[in-house]
Image (tube, rainbow over all chains, first blue to last red; front, side, top):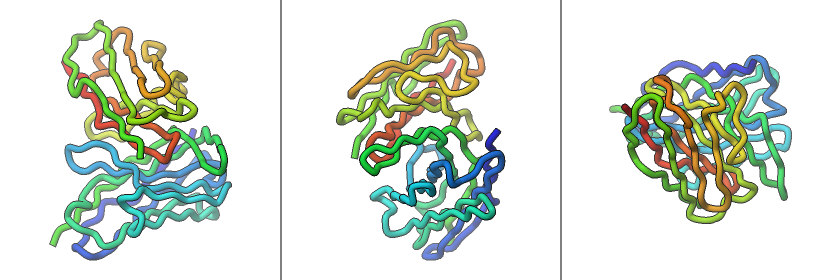
Length: 126
Length: 106
């Protein structure tokens, strides 16, 4: 059974960066896709970006292209999401999500999100 | 970017009733790469349906998905008390996008 355990809540100042980690157990990152999704208070789900290590591919949502960096450390089965230039509008719960049912078509990865971390609250406030 | 629209925004039903949730895409979703998630307050989302109609592991058979192209449906045949939650559709055929959600409440 795959479990994803995320790092704890963060409080950040505007203009700074935050890194959230997501450690997997019961599975290995290199066979799966990992995405990051955020949810602002009372709002819906927003995909930020993802990585499929086995194919060496990363992709980011247009809204975050210049601000988000997603990486993995296979040695510790941990994925990381760094978001820079924070503003109060970045206050949200950030989730990592893993997809095990990956299909690759013409160089593009497709996967639903089978497993989710518990979420990490990031608060941006001066 | 494929935009997903869900209707209705809120569905008020009683236990035992049938729920029908709609998800419409702004363009065709390739490969029927359409998923449904359930989210309860304070919890992470849970995958219910993938590939438009395949139930995820451990999901009861009262949940079913259908549709193709731009129109998809999630049906809950008989609502159980634990089914009252927010439901999101997601397309993963062209990058990833979520719909705004449908709240199913009593």
